[in-house]
Image (cartoon, rainbow, N blue to C red; front, side, top):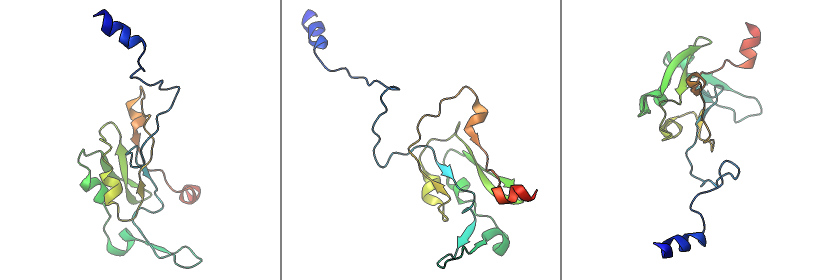
Length: 139
């Protein structure tokens, strides 16, 4: 017993000094997904100098709900914003598998390295889509 106790005095600690020293994350780390409302449900045709795109709902009368359909934890719900249906993320349920990032056909959902989501307010973990700034000024 004494031999083991003395050997631990001279060994490197197994823990890190988090939160004072941030960990080095691997490139393929799956953190909090981020959502861009501007590219959701949009077909981008901007190969020219001007920004040109068409809203999928306006053309086909349907919404792309692939992210909500493919989410294994049902952490994504489709809600209406500005008369259009957009995803709402509930990070209380999210398992950070990034399936939504993989399946989004418009690249509106991106993966990040954000891993610090601790909070005392569960409602702050529900990310609601915000209206576009230009649309908000009109109202």
